[in-house]
Length: 119
Image 1 (cartoon, rainbow, N blue to C red):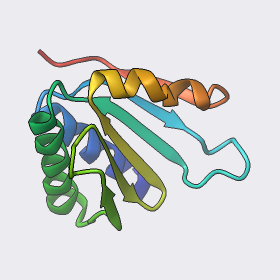
Image 2 (cartoon, rainbow, N blue to C red):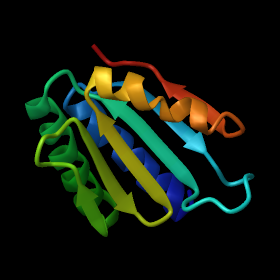
Image 3 (tube, rainbow, N blue to C red):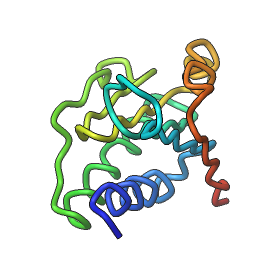
């Protein structure tokens, strides 16, 4: 398993640990001039859940693959938190903010993988 795949797996586990929903992984590796290779998009139902998902992702990536995000932005209001892992950008949204920005459709050429929710 390469580094990006291992990191994606830990990010997914961190999201699922805090019951993050509607996880989509956008593979941008076959699209030219992108800022990263993967987008991971998910949502939490409240600002406190969004923050908990972000903390969980940080913990899983640190313990699992010894990686920290280069930057985390948006924690002040926790409607949309972006986490920068260089080749992977993680977006944790509140549902209405996610619907508004509709990132999945901005990257319509990307290969989208939907991860089933864990209940």
